[in-house]
Structure formats: C-alpha cells, structure tokens
Image (cartoon, rainbow, N blue to C red; front, side, top):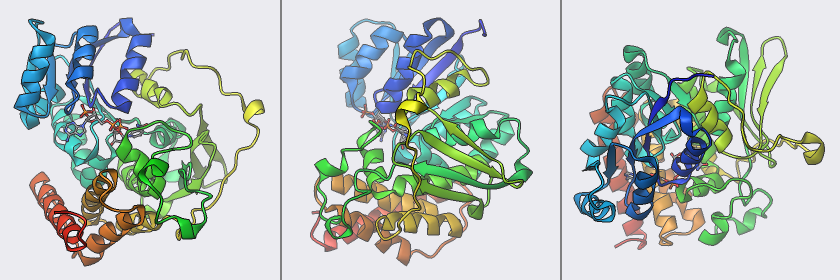
Length: 392
Ligand SMILES: NC(=O)c1ccc[n+]([C@@H]2O[C@H](COP(=O)([O-])OP(=O)(O)OC[C@H]3O[C@@H](n4cnc5c(N)ncnc54)[C@H](OP(=O)(O)O)[C@@H]3O)[C@@H](O)[C@H]2O)c1
C-alpha cells in the first residue's frame, strides 16, 4: 500500500463515470487529492463536488456556466475556468498525476490529448477519443512516457488478463456485451422501440448516450476500435460475444489454447478503482462475486441483423483511416436526435449508414484533420436529417 497521495483531475465529474470515480475516492479518502473537476453544464452538482473535494480548479462549458458556478460557490477559493482552454488547464495542471477522462463523445478528445502530451497518466473512459484518434493518442503517450489505463470494464478486463503476458502469444481477444434491452425482442419490433425502452439497460446504469449505444450495440463496435488502439492489435484478433449476465467482461485466448477471462460484479466502481490504484490492488467494500448464486453464464454470437450498427462499426474497424471518425460523428448526431425524440430508433442506423457509405476514406495525420472530418460529417448528418424532415 502506497502512502503517497495521488493527485487526480476528473473530466466529466458530474456524469455516471465521474460520480462513480468520486465514490471510489470517498472510499479511499486518504489516498487521493482532487486537483481539478470539469463538467459540462450541471453546475449544481459540480458545486456540491467542489465543496466536498476542494479542488484548486473547476471548468465548465461556457462563460455563463462559469458565472453560475461562481455564484453557487460564493467566495470559496478556487479558479473557475470554461471552454476548451478551461478543460485543457484542468487536464494539464502541474500537480495532477492522473486524469480521469470521462467526458462523453469527441468533446473529450482535446483535453485527453493535452493531458498525455503533458506527461499525465490518463484513466480512459472516453472511448470516442480512442476511436477517432487512437494513433495520435498512442504517439502522445509514447512521446511523453505517460500511460493510458482503461476504465471501460471490457478493456480493464483485457488489461488485467494481459498483465505479465507476452502479446505475441495472443490468438484472439473477446469483449463481451450484455446485448442491451433488445437482445430478445422480435426483429420486426426493433425499429419502433421508444426512447424510454432503449434507456432501460438490463445490467448497467450509465449516461444516456452510452446507454443508447448499448441498445444498438454501436457501443461494442466503438469498444472494438478502442481495443485495437489500446492494445495495438489487428482487427482480426478481436471479437465480441453476447453475455447477458455481464459477469465475464473479457476473454483472452492464447495460441496454446488457454483462455484467461476477467470476471467481476457488474459495477463500474471495480474497473474504476483498478485504474486509480494501478499497479496496486486495494480491498473493495463491494460484496464478493458469488458464482454459485449466479450459476448460469451464457454466451451467444452477435446476430448482425439485430444490430446493424455493429456491422457498420466492424467495417470501420477493418477499413481504418478516416472511417472511424465518420462512424463516430454520424452516430453522435443520430443518437442526440434520438435522445431528443426527433428520429426513431431504426433511423439511428439510417443516419450513420448514409454518412459511412458516402465517405471516401483518407489518412488523417493531425488533430486538425480529424476535427475537420468530424465537423464535415456532422454537417452531412444534419443535412440528411433535415432532408427527411426530422430537423429544422
Ligand atoms: N457510464 C458507464 O458505465 C461507462 C462505462 C464505460 C465507458 N463509459 C464512457 O465514459 C464516458 C462518459 O460516460 P458517462 O456514462 O459517464 O456519461 P454521462 O453520465 O452522460 O456524463 C458525461 C459527462 O461529460 C460531461 N459532458 C458531456 N458533454 C460535454 C461537453 N460537450 N463538454 C464538456 N463536458 C461534457 C457531462 O457534464 P454535465 O452533465 O455537467 O453537462 C458529464 O460530466 C463516455 O465516453 C462513455 O462511453 C461509460
């Protein structure tokens, strides 16, 4: 057990991962100091977090939100920042050792890259960053010597199974997926599923965007691309199995036929704690996993007809280049439209397919090039929605 406190900055502290991270910090209060907290617009919750954890920096999405936060915090001594520059400062502040990257979507990319460039270790939940800029992130980490420690439960599982292993002996790595709320729904009923039904995830309690991505299985597609970059694997070395119990998070098959799997309770505090304590393991207050109570662990292949967005994601994984950027941007626009109830569940696929099938792939070498393809795709997706009468 280490005595030295870890200095932690959390990007996305008001979200599901952010709040679970603070829950872990509460459990191990004497091992952490919070240096910075960043959120989008939820200044109410952020103000409570600031009062409890006393960071020196806080950042929000806009100047108006910064004023609002200042009003809520009164004369408390803290620097309040906003926008890209604010997030960058929180991610790179001098005293920070580890940055938890848990903003949703491509909005998390710039501060994540900035943290790595500055030599900070990153506990990565924001998979979209890895999907659109995996090569840049790897390069930034290699250049500064910083580490990317996965938070996503499946990637944490792989990371743990690979500790002490030689990667040249890997045959295949499987990520598991719960299958989401529509795993057993008749195919004919899928396209009309409502927002409320899609938000009812059977196993995990998560933010709204990732919950919808889990219902379409796009989440698993994004995770395959994330795994490709995190572990430097070839697309054919990666696979997915549906595992409705969400107890086995990942399996690594080696060339000699041995398979190592990582199992745990379905609770994000476990992989988050591992990312925060790494390379140590600390005693969790959560109950032990009782397999004699659970008994059944089932595994099924992915039915692509049920999850056509997963099919698009695996195409993007194999094609590489700018495809994953287009996939992610179109998906972010489509999921947002579904969350606003301006398109149906089935139309999420239509939007992403429209953008991906029209895209002429190109190599992307810089953050600017990535952000350009991202914004071109968003514009194209919005135009498509407008042409279908779904947006004004
Ligand atoms: N939840 C999970 O169990 C889970 C598991 C594995 C991976 N992940 C990944 O972790 C990330 C976060 O997921 P989540 O479930 O925690 O999401 P969430 O509950 O929706 O929280 C998102 C966080 O990001 C902030 N945010 C959103 N858009 C922003 C923007 N444009 N600029 C700045 N801040 C912004 C939100 O701030 P406000 O609320 O203050 O606006 C909030 O703090 C996602 O990439 C997700 O795929 C999540």
